[in-house]
Image (cartoon, rainbow, N blue to C red; front, top):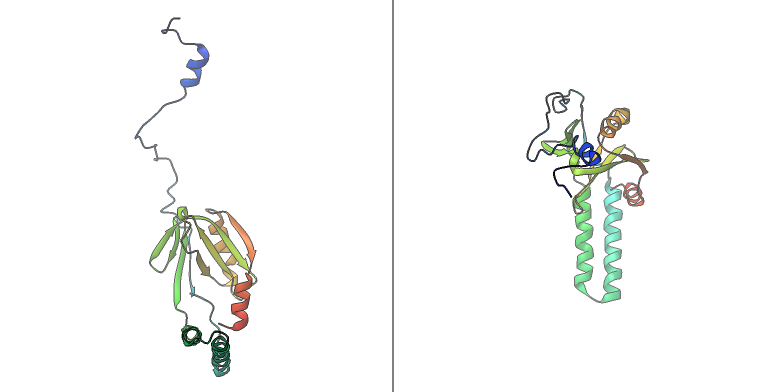
Length: 188
């Protein structure tokens, strides 16, 4: 066999291929997404807060005492009853903390919450949550143990925000989860 001759089929397949190891593609004609002016900015509460009156705290205290007493009578351990009491106290203290007002921005590079930027490449998709008091979007991270990012917005902004996010990430519409319905019912 003669190694100098190449078959015409092999030659035509490799003639359009070029390997540029370490070479960057020519980006002179590519659109500049980082300088795009298409962005959405707003500010909203970091979580949904419910007004809690004295009766809410009374029901919490009574429920905590009853639960601690039941735990003590079943287990005869002071530590278990004490843990329930501390949990009830922590629940009450955390329930009285008012939410901060946070600024949000979505542009072609990602989501900015306050001063922290999250690029779209760090998310695998978004879930548009419907059925709650305030509409929200949850960004699902690529990393397994990263906490999802949830942002709240006004109902009037829903179409603009979902369209902007939908340009970069796949989305799905979900109904509010049962645990969130329970928390809303408890007015926590």
